[in-house]
Amino acid sequence: DTAVSQTPKYLVTQMGNDKSIKCEQNLGHDTMYWYKQDSKKFLKIMFSYNNKELIINETVPNRFSPKSPDKAHLNLHINSLELGDSAVYFCASSHRAGAKNIQYFGAGTRLSVL
Amino acid sequence: GENVEQHPSTLSVQEGDSAVIKCTYSDSASNYFPWYKQELGKRPQLIIDIRSNVGEKKDQRIAVTLNKTAKHFSLHITETQPEDSAVYFCAGSGGGADGLTFGKGTHLIIQP
Image 1 (cartoon, one colour):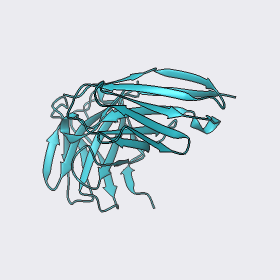
Image 2: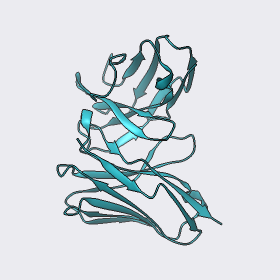
Image 3: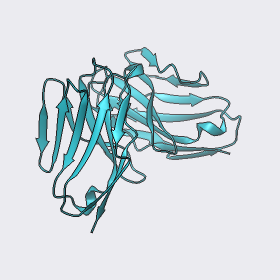
């Protein structure tokens, strides 16, 4: 069974639209993350979420908002999409909070903004 | 915040030879350094990690060394095989949003 799963795998949309990416983990982990991987393969943390505490990377525009209905899910909502948002978005999870814990990644969602 | 530098960006070695990838970090508070392997179109997968209370760790053909004083750590792959071809990322735990700060990746190419 896939431990960290994301949907959709591919997302193609127009500039200005609002879209969501879903993430679910069945590992029983307490903490979930969103990372962005740009066209140059650079991986950058966007958010971490642990027990209702959201920690935001200050460089992330407020058009991006994570939503967690429960501990096993952390969805990513993006408003007013821009061309520069095109990237692969990876969800990850770890047993406990803090970057010093092993993180397991989902398969990624490739977002293309036209 | 944390800054992780990774070199080289591309590394080509003959099958059977060793490969070494080096990283430096800036945040002396970082205490966890994982290495991830990412094959084309796939997710990053953890291959080995090291914590700051250890200087070296080995797992079969893969080893990682850490020099806390110099703030650098390295990945060593011996007896390289074609399936080792991938992009390798180092990371440090001192990043913002309580997440990992990744290096920019090394594209490892194993020549037959």
